[in-house]
Image: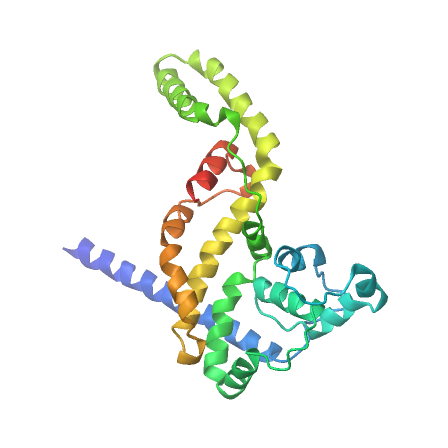
Length: 275
């Protein structure tokens, strides 16, 4: 009985400790957001702005508006200007801002005006939204735009051998417990796996990153539309149901190791299963 009481106390203390750390991290994020509100990003002149990734969304989703040419962007030192005006919290927001700025329009009315007034007057809502958007501040979020193109990872010819390959590897591992000589035989499929890893790494990397981040983007969007009636958008809410099956598959893509070291065969299998 004493052990049960002692164990319960330990569990309660661990829970309270994690709850305290979570609250402190949340408080730290809010303090950071408050200090950065309406301010240029610190040391923007020397900060790393990856414009190759920033402009990906604008390059994939092109509107029928006048667009600044690359030569004009270079002539007016547009990148330095963007560094100064960029106050975004998320990487996808940064990409959207870049697209808005390089595609000027004659439309004098902007639906963003209502949101600007809302966030200016409602500080608590603004901070709550920013905390959610921080979840999309990882550079991997730049790759979401890769899913908006027409070209996806194609099913390779060797894909039909995936199931026999897995069966062979598992069988060799089991047999090697009793017959160590099979460990030598196991080297052949492992070498094959290394070759496929090198061959498919660049092809699958951006799609794996984009799938994981798109799944996160959907979760963040669900939270945002529920925070205020002014943030509610029926078309966005309706899209959640059509993306439900995607999320179920996308949640399977979990890599406890660095993505660059993950198994390419499993990676490709999960990518194909997610669509």
